[in-house]
Image (cartoon, rainbow, N blue to C red):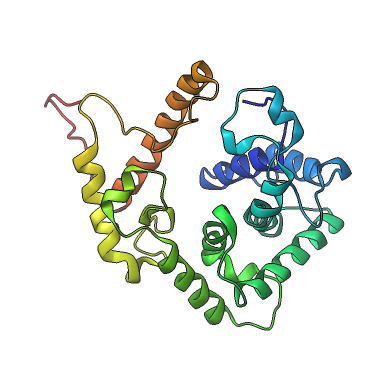
Amino acid sequence: MNPQSSPYQTCSALTLAEALPLDPHGPLYQGAFAYLNQESTAYQDGWPFTVESNDGYPHAPWMGYDPKRNDAESFGLNLGLARQILTHDCKDAALKAKAERIVKKSLDLLFTQEDFGEMGVDTFCGWLKQLDKLPQSAYSQDQIQERIVTLIEKRVERDPERWKVYTPRPSYFVRSRTDAAYPRLKALVEAELDYLIDTCPENDVWEIPWSWFGLYPEAFQVARTWWKSWKAIENLAFLMAFDRIEPVKKGNENHE
């Protein structure tokens, strides 16, 4: 609930702006890029996963300021921010050069390691529809796509019983039939679609599969409501993309 800017919140905002989509020439993108270009936001060769000001406000346990967590989790955040910079209307040459360095280093690591932290594989997945905008490297687009899809296959949780807790479901990586990983995850995607229909409570939406483990209990109930709304929209969009929601009938018939 930190009202101040942070790289993580900025990445989330840009991801939503891209999905809507908002004008990449508009103030949200340009303001975000100006913020990311400030020296005070830098961390090593990129940006930090957590910031010190988080500790002054209610937050999830994993969002408290922690340099060790920054070392472990900044990879995925930096790759995600670099993608936003390189695929949208960023005019700042220095910021674009920084983003290119991050992506080139990430591509080298893509083929030499397996562990990319909590966000790493998810963020690589975000590049699958924009491989033509990657900086030049020693790898072809086909090689990069194959490697990313292979990592997705290894990361995705295949046991529906485990979807009750915070695990990477198929919908983390596949949002439509045109997504690169869909052919290999088709059966799992269909299983999750069934799961969502079967587990949606009557007169309510899905519960979030995580907690704050007793930290800031009153604030968590507020955050829980916000997140239930967010995840409900995500789940409905996922169901709609695969034709699992019947269209509302128009005319004189009663409908909700």
